[in-house]
Length: 98
Image (cartoon, rainbow, N blue to C red; front, side, top):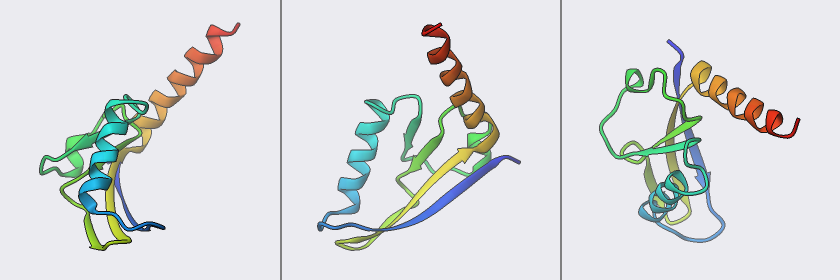
């Protein structure tokens, strides 16, 4: 199995909400990080992300706000597949400049 999860505890400088963090992650996944970051609100397990080409899949349903500046965030990734896809992205960029 190559799918793992990151369980990240974050302390923000400014007060915010978990819902706001989720909103920003969703915006990033459909905007500037499209294809690199994905966003899910589904109930998921590691097997759901085997061969997922994204480097990270933000799991909105698994994180939580502990207070207004302290949050637990969860993101999944297929280490081998996601990394390989980023290598392909890099090769495409490099070859475009040859």
